[in-house]
Length: 445
Image (cartoon, rainbow, N blue to C red; front, side):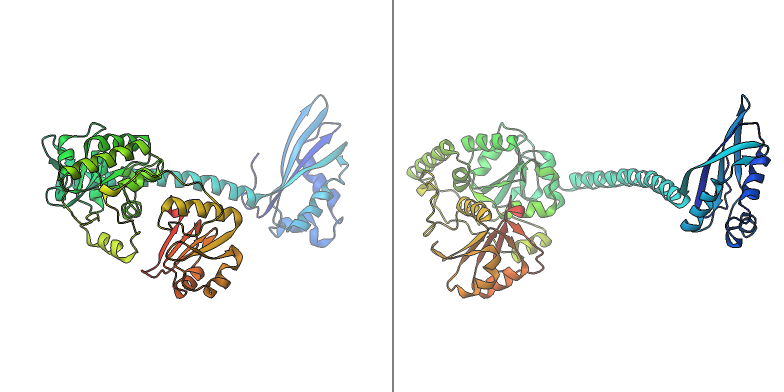
């Protein structure tokens, strides 16, 4: 059934029933005739149709066995109230032509809603096409960039022709990754002192380099990364460990994730202790003692990964570097994890494991603790009162909070002389002093 395209707002749908055979003109005549004068001059159907407020009345009927059933469609440009009154008036019609009849209003539909639904559906189709096209273009650009980087910078190094960055020959510190894709991703962000082991069988080239350079192993955040670390511990010298976030790989990390992972790299002995790898730590200590007895001293170089791009150096210099314990490999001892107690004074606040345990506990208690530089608890406040009372504590050095680290908390802590802030979650921070270290677990993990 066709509907007048000039209808404005609503569509009245009605059903008709007669006890005899009637024609379409009979139905239209009954509608005009029996509603005439019923609603006054303002809602007279003939006047409304002449004024364009009512569209053409469409009728569809079907006569069977001496009875007629059908539908009536009336487009309306009136408002909701007037359209409803007009629809209700149709149900007063009791005869069509010579026959008794009955009209029931099936619905009054808002045509604009239907149009919006069609617009939404069509827009979704158009958007999907745009996204698919854009994705293909994006993928081709990425592939092109990767190919250009590979052709221009990646080199083959050593007897095994391992994928590496161009700075691998001259750099005092190197970053060891798993595969060629990892090297390419780091090259894309200007990190060129990289080399790939290409599996868990550590090549001789990497083993030899590890005895001459400072080595940071940059591992995927999965079980494969753990296997490579264990293999390297047996045949090579490792100084630091950096990990991709859990479940991710180095080849898919963003610039920010890469810089963050390398900034917070962990000394190998501390990493093994934190991960509970007691057997590996014991073997490391024994090897260090044996090397000391043999008079072997590894070449001393700066303990930072070389970032050759100026933009990366700016990031490295603009944010505080995470302090690491200055420990000698020959003096590392296997120490059992002390049992957690209520008393926290005198704790090692530079120990990430201790800080993490306290942050989790303080989150449950909705409390915060302020420590001195020697690890003694100076004050404990509820999270809700921390900002108000923090300035009353003197000699504060480290703050561990079970709440959100906000911009206001950073400003007050800095003025109070705090140097380190650890929290569970980071709020909207727009500026941070370079001398103040801020670590939150939603960014740290």
